[in-house]
Length: 405
Image (cartoon, rainbow, N blue to C red; front, side):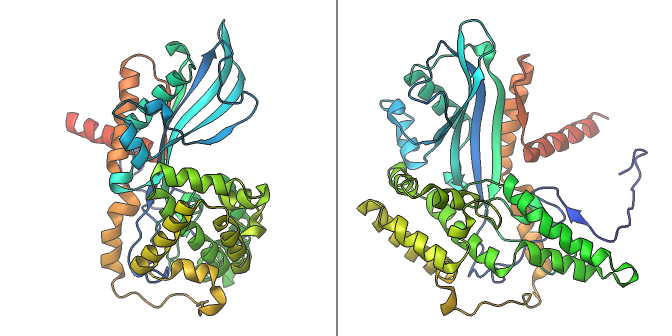
């Protein structure tokens, strides 16, 4: 709506959607168009983080000169009622030292974040649970900080996986709306930046045609730039990885990541990035590279992890189809290069999918809103909402204003 309360109509040759994953503009493709037998809904990376000034020089067991990426230990929860849940629904902490603290007697300033890698439904962790785990973890290690030094609280909410954008629509998504979030890690920024040049080039080429401009051709070229067959196949491999990791207890994740980080750095780094043009992507960009990666890491798996992985591969394929098999044995399968056929049930499917791809996990976002409001009510606002949480908070504020009017 406009400033005067009326509607505003904007005419444009193209619409580029940069509103994020839970977009009201971008339509998702059907499961069949994505090579699936049934819908594979998004998962959610949930994390609670805070930046604090650590008292003294006590940051051990973490290295004050380097970033710790994954700490899946649960020894800080032994004897507590949080242990069983942490073993079944794991979370890890990452630690990012950021220099000298800002108070007398402080050692390092550091950012700590307790993170659930990915989960959905009952396996999706709560912000309060993660906060309690983090507080207990730091206390166990003797890492102390003044309450007044707590700042930059983060309530991280990242949708991951799900269906790709429908390639037949005129709307051109970018970033989260285009599903460039890595489905097994949650990383997105570098992938979005790497994808944007191809999209810009595709749109510019069509716009430069002047009177010969065709919006359908422009959108099709942009979609082809974002998700050509090679990118889709690489993403399918990562989607399976995210599904596996999100379903495992902490014992299996420790073994998996022990093997993962025993690989050469360009190999594991390339998987974490996972987009053409980013470092190490050559180790995952082709079916042969993915076969090599799979064999190499499997040989490093502990026996129990290897058995669990094979069993999950069989179960996933039986439930969703040969998505992962097409990704690693591509020459055996016929890979379609054209757009999917018309979907006669598109309108009904769009309506059913709206709650998933627009509303998202409302309970997680509402919990973050309530915790943020609680902090503000105490007079010490210390955190900022993620974009999806901020949108929910704004919507609720508008509803409250309307009711009060």
